[in-house]
Length: 228
Image (tube, rainbow, N blue to C red; front, side, top):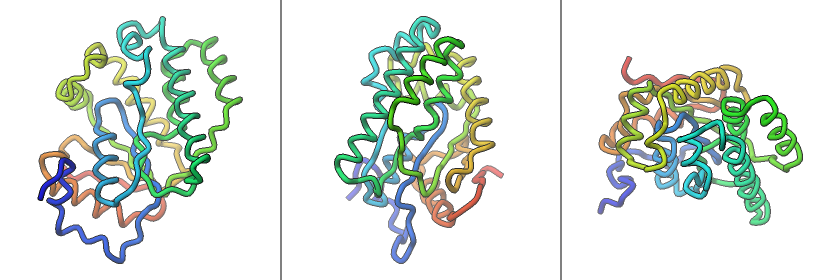
């Protein structure tokens, strides 16, 4: 039987006796495939998911069309949403979770620095400092990279109306910001994945090979570049 995650196609992936990371965070630019990977990992490991909810942000579509006028409410909405998600974890006594997330809480400030002007950023940081955002540290962070043409192709394929206005300039700025952020990131073991030639949806072997490599990582910084 094959379910919609494709997990039954991975019969050769033996997890018995493996030490699995209890909390995995998947990160990367818009369209790179972080939510798809997070959901597949959750299905494979039988983990819960902690996912971004961009469809709940009423400002997002307007932001893509006119970033300057709606950047601040867009970022504040995401920030408050993250805070609520973390509070819910605490209330459910799940602060030591087995789960997969498609975001790092630290990335909120990355987006704020890219999109907000100086006064807006100062206000955003004041709000940030007053919120309780002590999210659990991941046991593994997977950072997915892809060039602009791949990102735009994947954005078109998934066909979300709000994302039609995303420009190459904005994606390029985010790519640079992510590169700088993860250049200094040392809060958790980090796997940097070149996802340009990986298709975890239609080529199950790509997904299996990635998971096999992920499970070898317990510390430090690692690179996965299957095209080379």
